Amino acid sequence: MIIVKIKDNGINMVGHADRKDQTGIDRVCAAVSALTCNLINSLRDLTGDRIRADTGGGMTVIEWENLSDGGKLLVDSWFLGLVDINQEYKCIEFQ
Picture 1 (cartoon, helix red, strand yellow):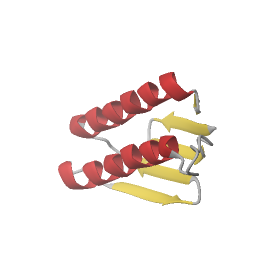
Picture 2 (cartoon, one colour; picture 1 turned 30 degrees about the vertical axis):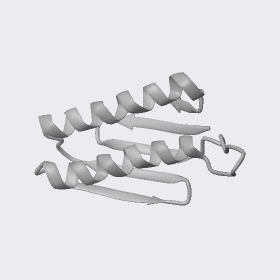
Picture 3 (tube, rainbow, N blue to C red; picture 1 turned 180 degrees about the vertical axis):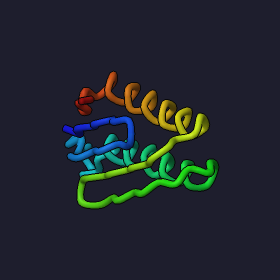
């Protein structure tokens, strides 16, 4: 289970989807990771927002002080992607 906590000043994620297929690859976890890496890169490269991001070992922390409207839109888009994944695979708990 992936636990996602969204706060006013950041995002905390921990856990794994635990949805390995017959080849041993967890494509659901890979999809969540790809969306999250894209969020971090987009916040850094497409907005003037200053963020701090720490990832690794089944956890991600993204923090900011003042998120621009563009940054908020990127976070909303990331969230919609996670909701779609969770509707299909029931592997994310939002807190």
